[in-house]
Image 1 (cartoon, rainbow, N blue to C red):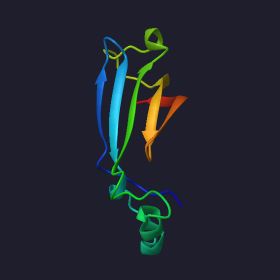
Image 2: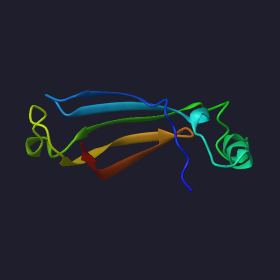
Image 3: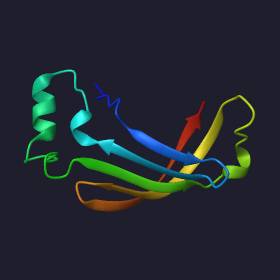
Image 4: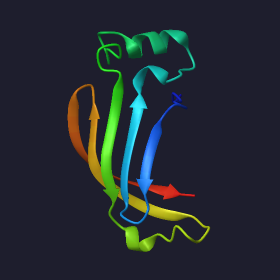
Length: 97
């Protein structure tokens, strides 16, 4: 069971590989209303006090990706993800469609 969030905004500068996105934490939709209530509560993420998650980073293997050519590419992204007021350095791989 994974929650969905359809209100994420992002900016990607393909020439530089920089990536920024913002996640409104209260916009996560859960299968069960009680799960959503707990997630947003003061005991868990306190989304009223800390309403956004933020990521700022860059694609580290930019030379492997051709934005001008259709296809799928594996991208590695490194940067700082801040959630609940705590910043963490992360590196993740994902597929660009």
